Image 1: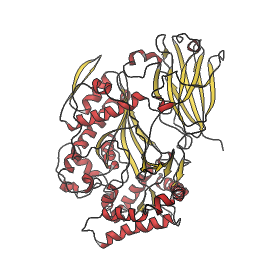
Image 2: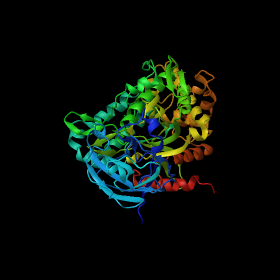
Image 3: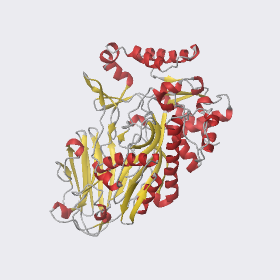
Image 4: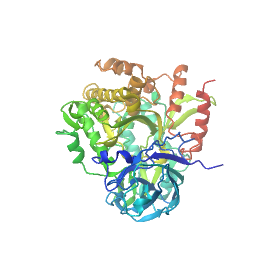
Length: 595
C-alpha cells in the first residue's frame, strides 16, 4: 500500500513583510511552523489530506532576505521540500539545524547548515532530507541572489510545498510497556494502587451510598487487572448516568493543558495601558513537562511545548489569553492603536473587531481531540494512556461503544500587522477562560477540526463566537460562586466540562450539537437563574448525558452520532489507541451513516 504523504502548500508572504515588522521576528523573518501554516495533515493522523491552496505574493527587495519556517524533528524525520518560482528568478532553499534552545536564541540564518539547494537548478528546486537528530530546524526560502550575498530578486512569486514521509510525530509508548519499565519506582516503591484507591475514595462525599462506592471499587479492581496485564485498558468509566459521583472523580484528574488558573475564587489578573505595551512587555516562555519524582527525572508530567511556534507566536498567545480574560471579566479597559486609529476596549468582542479592522485575519476553529488526563512522558516519548468511557449505548453488533473521553474547544488563530497568536476557550479543571494554545498534543490523542470560519469570509460569525465565549465566561464564574459554591473544583463537572463550553458556543453560533459527553447537571435548568445572556435556551436544548435515560432510542441514536463526530482520528490512522477502538469506529461509521 502506498504510504500517505502529508502535503502542505504554503504561500510565502514576502509582499507584506515590510508592513509586519512590528510583530514578526526580524532578521530575516520567521513565520512559525511549516506544519501549521494550514491544517495539519500527517500521514498517520488523517484518512486523507485536505485540499490546500497556495498563496502567491511578490518578494520585494529590501531588508528581508528570506522567509523562515520552523520544523521539528522527532528523530529521523524525513521531509521533502519543493520551492518553485513562476518568474525568471532562481529559488533557493536552505535547512539549518538542529538549533539550540528551540532556536529562540539563534538568529535566523545563523544556525548550522544541514542542506541547501545548488545554484543553476532553474525555477524549481527540491530537497529530500532526513532530520536525524531530534530538535528544531529552520527552512529558509528565498532566491539564489541571497545565497550570493545580495538582496532577494524583487517582484518574484515563490511557492513552497512540503511533505513529511516518516517519523512525523513524537513517538509514543504504550502504558503497559511504560509500567513494566518503571514497575519498581512507580508501583512497588510508591504503592501506586493504594495511592489511586485513596484518590478515588477521597473524591467521594461522606454521604455517598454503598452502591456508589461499589462503582468506584470497579475502577480499583480494573487497576489491579491492568497492572497484572489481565486487561489492556484502565480506567474504563461506566456510563455517566450510572456513575453518580463521576463529577468529583473527574475533578481529581488534572490535565496540564492550563498554565494558569482561572478559578472563580481568584480575580483575573488586572491589566492597564495598551495591548501593544502588554504584548511588547511579555517574555517568551516555553513550558516543559516536569518530573513526577525528584529521583526519576525521565518520567515527566504534562505536555511538551509546540516548539514550531516562533518566539513571537508563543509570547503573543500567552499575552492575548491574559488580555481576553481581563476584558471578559469586565472590570477594566485597555486601548489598542493601529493605522486605523486608537480604540478603547471593554470586551473581547471590541478587541477582535479592532484587530480585524486593522488588517488581521482571524480564523475560529471547532477542534476536538482525546483528553490526556494521565499526561505522562518517558524522556522525549509520550505515554499513550487514554481514560475510557463506556457510553452505555450498544452498536448494531450488540457491544457497547467504548471510546477515550473526548476534549473539545473553540480556538482562534490571529495573524496581522501587530498580533500573531493562537488562543482557545473552554471550561477546564483550572477554571473557565481563554488559554494560550502553545502545547504539543501527543499523536495518540488525535487532532480534528469539525469546522472553521475565517474573518475574511464571515466576520460576523467569528465575532459571534467571541461574544458567546464572553457570556459563557461570565455565566460560569457567577454560577461557581452561587449555585455551585460548595461543589468540588468550583463546580467543574456539575456546571459542565470542556465539551459543555464548546457545545454552548457551537449551538448558539453554528446551530449544531456535536460534542460528547456533555456533563452539565439537568437540575440546573431549574436551579440556575435566567440571565438573559443568550445561554438560557442553549442550556435547555443541550443533551444531559450525565442524567440521561439510556433506554431512550432517540437518545441512543444521538449519542452514537456525537461519539462519531467527536472521533479525534480518521479510521485509517496509525495512532488510534488500540485495534478494538478501530474496529468499533468502523462499525460506528456504518451505524450512523444515512441509509
